[in-house]
Image (cartoon, rainbow over all chains, first blue to last red):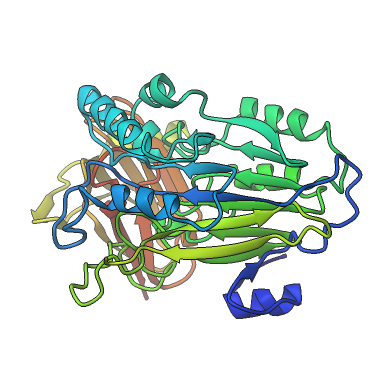
Length: 297
Length: 125
């Protein structure tokens, strides 16, 4: 079973209201593992550092810095920040690719939160199978525990054909196999694991195999990027949440013939750009998602 | 498969006419078995041709080549998919069973411009 849902429908499903969006992790109160504690994290996605297109984002050289300042200004400091890929815009030149990665690293050094996690997007990794990304940001897939929640990053971009691959799928199965079906788990990917819009290449070739591995876990949520817009989708009990980007928004999945960036609106600078804050961990495990649009000033 | 390879090798006279990023298939060869063979070249960042018109129910063989870097050919609604490696043509045989206009895209990331690399197969009749 798979279905797209809008924010209102999702909130009704979760039995929640207000300006904060609650995901399907709500109700995960019967954790068998370590008791979860209340904490926040931030998801930043699709920076595309190095992109040039004044009609799409004339502030491309300053948007990331604006996001860094906005995260630093959050009333409550997040425990960590997850970057879900496309830190850089692609280039055929390996030297330029590394220059862009280096510049991103220098800019985000101004984040007051120092616990940072990274995964690549296809713009970072597909042309060299992740080699440059690994030099600057480490492994392209990993897992860690925080506040009683297990977090996993799944790399579906280092293979330019958008495959996770048998080796990583086996790793994922073994990694999650240490946990029972009630453990709270968060998975980060760049591309959607489900076929959101295959005609726009918004899919993962072996995503169905990954979902088979994730399906036994009753309190598992997926956060991803790639599509440059907020989007919510259910695959059975698993919620998938796409994040806005920090460079340009894209049209709704399949809504027009071509997948082209939405042009900059001078009347609404930075419209459609932003980042996401997630509250996770407190019993009875109310996960909340708050979208933070970038402000013009 | 050996027979289809032979059919593909018999391709003669295929002419690609390109205007900007839009190309239209103009000629093809038909073998004795009435298989329409169409050559499609995947370049950075365009398929040539990127508009292909077919008749409902005709047998088709797409011969896909990529002279620069590895590319993909994916028409999800027609369930056609191939990876195209430079130096090794990929061949996709099918018979369209329904009319309509169907997207195809490159689904192997190939660089800046990959996102716009797409085309259509139009099935008439």
